[in-house]
Length: 140
Image 1 (cartoon, helix red, strand yellow):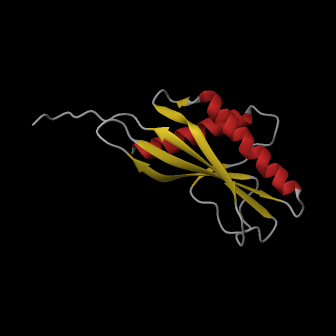
Image 2: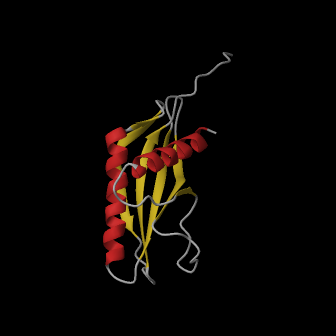
Image 3: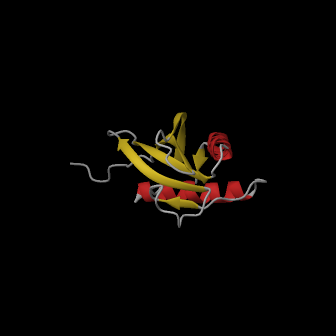
């Protein structure tokens, strides 16, 4: 449930913050960016999904992948993609804490999809978040 709450917190934050920007607001969805063959998707688009997590008795961490897609027959699609990725990265790094319980680590990575087969341009931003600590309630 905590991971779901984090995904929804990122989604809500991006929807709100991107609406305050001068650029068009892309849909911010949960899930996977679909293959190039699916043309029903509205572009530009942002998809949020969990990637992997780890933890111990202290605190857990989870990697969240934020995927971006734009559509253009020309190289302007690449420019739109990079601008969107940069806008989101800056917004998240400025805020760092969502809903007073999810903390963004300062490290991040991004990459572009190497297989650019059509007018769909795709990229991915990977972020690491600290999950709230779970306190043991029963002592043995």
